[in-house]
Image 1 (cartoon, one colour):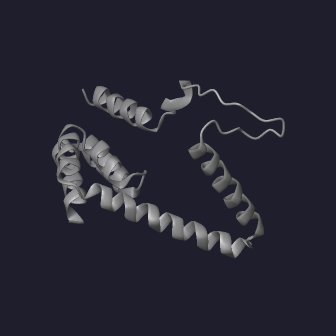
Image 2: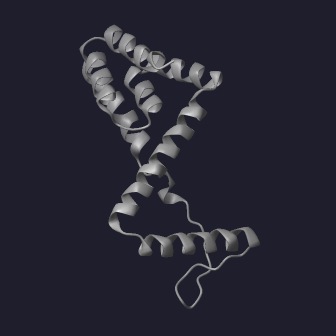
Length: 142
């Protein structure tokens, strides 16, 4: 039974981190210069912004790039925390956590952290400690 549960957890984790969008093919038009061509004004504006961003990265020193990456990571984490504050997400997260505690921790954290591995280990040893730990991780920051 434990082996089945472990294989099920492993399968779910592999699905979570698998490349699910690899089969989606999006046709694009490419200009002779090798850059994608915009078909709408919004796409043209986005492509111009990307090109400008790439050029600004080339002009930056290594230290400036690292600082920019840190700022971007902080902004993404803040946005993720703001997104996770809604009660519906918390309810769904609790339901997933009750079914599979490590998966709930993984969805809450957004990446493979030591908390995920601890939850996985506790769940494999016995379900209840893993569930308690996962719920503490989710509600511990509240």
